[in-house]
Image (cartoon, rainbow, N blue to C red; front, side):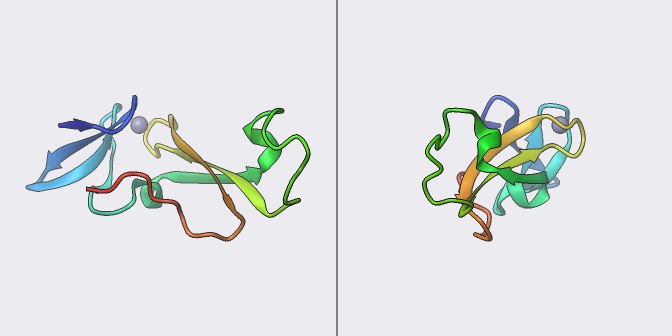
Length: 93
Ligand SMILES: [Zn+2]
């Protein structure tokens, strides 16, 4: 077992490595991006916090993305990304 963060780990599932939430929900193969299998919410950047980009540099170019476990709704990760940009990948085997 390899821990990815506080809530996510990589486990052996049916002979293959998979992402698993601490609740036991299997998000998908560890060779993929776990965010593909998570619940996704995209919001204006200001949701990330009042001190994130207070001068609104870049206008509406950037978004705040949240990724939650479909099993227990725990927040597994967040990204600040360009609007329309593919999912950022921060875990790779
Ligand atoms: Zn979960």
